[in-house]
Image (tube, rainbow, N blue to C red; front, top):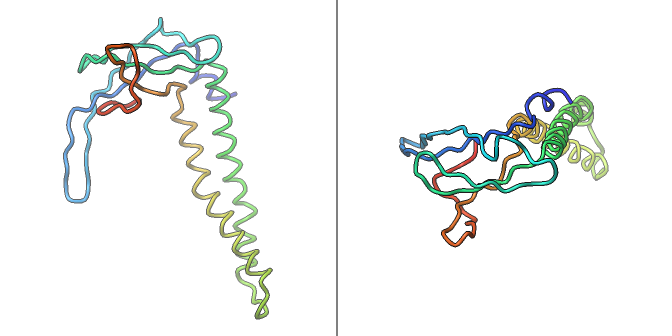
Length: 167
């Protein structure tokens, strides 16, 4: 399993960011975060399924919750993202040369099959170029912690969390 075996262990650390400030410039916006790395639930992942853990943000003292996946589930998702990314990038070794080959040929007027083939190859190359690196980046950042929520006083959880995010 490679990198997933070393990154996604039984130990679980939450990296939660609390927004400190927003600076707007000419055509850009800079957000500064106060990131806290904390061990919750004894620092262990659940043995099966997902588990919701409650914690308190160290900066603003709001009660929050996050869902932590089991190690097996997190590793499986990591491997799927990684394999999809590599397969899409490797597909470029076939689709890109074919696109160059078919795109450089002259076709008879009214030959829609050749035009459709080039269109499908352009789509395949675009998907490989865009989604291949995206899946690899997702795999590299995947930690198995998701669904950050505020905990209301009645015990319910909010859907939107403003000013906080998982890192």
